[in-house]
Length: 166
View 1 (cartoon, rainbow, N blue to C red):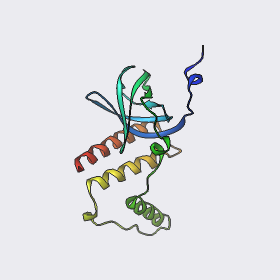
View 2: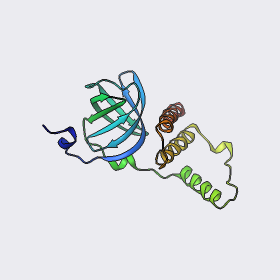
View 3: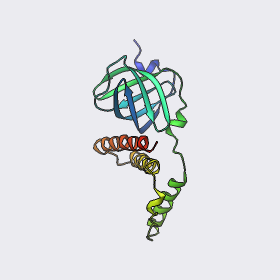
View 4: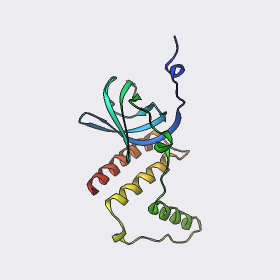
């Protein structure tokens, strides 16, 4: 009998992405541990049972699917369609990100980083900044499970903040 990994027709990218899993009225923050065009491996608490119809959301991206299996704080997803993995793992550059990069460069040069005026902030901008911080921290080589769980919570708060901005 072949294992599930031997039956996979798609290669998977090992990632550490924050996302939200929607199942009916339940919304659960999750970590995407690996991702392919047709499925994903998630870590999280209170994951839905196998065969549950779900929607995986990351920022403006969403994929419909079903829980293939669930156990031990993990779940395998099978997407209904094909996703573009590169879009899901891409870090989108924007003016806010450039400002953060400039601030970090200033810190490296040991000079003071400019502080933006409060009128330049919006809930959407703050939400985006929080998500980008989560992504950078998640990519850290010293990432721990405990920090990862807190990052997932922070990502869920960023998504809530973004929804309030609309």
